[in-house]
Structures are given as C-alpha cells and as structure tokens.
Image (cartoon, rainbow, N blue to C red; front, top):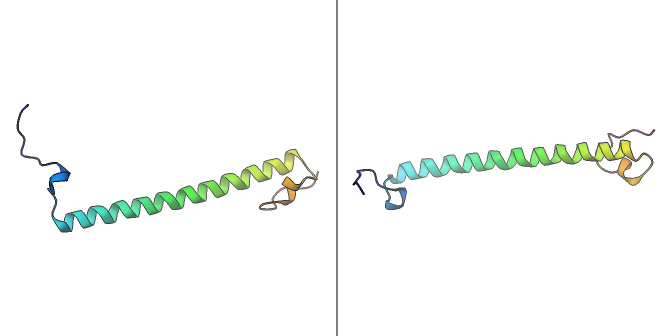
Amino acid sequence: MSTTTAKPIAQNSFSSRERNAIQNRIAEIRSSWNQQTRQFRAEQASTIQSLLGHMFPGTAAQTAGSGRARVG
C-alpha cells in the first residue's frame, strides 16, 4: 500500500474554522431537505385526500383534509 500525504477527516485534517464551516453547511442542507420533505408530504396528503374525495363522493374522505374535493 502506497503512502499518501492526504489525511483522513478522522485525523482532524481540517482547521476548526473549516470544520465549523462544513458543519454549518451540512446543517443548512439538512434543514432544507427536511423542509422540502415536509412540503412534499403535505402536498402528497392533499392530493390523496382529493382523489379519495372524487373516488368516494359523499364519504368522510371528501370532507376531511383540504376540502378541495367536490360533491358529485
């Protein structure tokens, strides 16, 4: 196995300022991901609720949720 000058992250090859910057960026990405996931799930739930309301008019599925479903 050949030797290399690059150190793995585990050996603290980054300065504390670099580590902080990386951790902050990871936190931003994680936050954005979570926000987008919540929004996507809410849209999914709304779409499913609406479809159920159209498929089964006059049932509880129609009146629950966003209220987008129509009678008939």
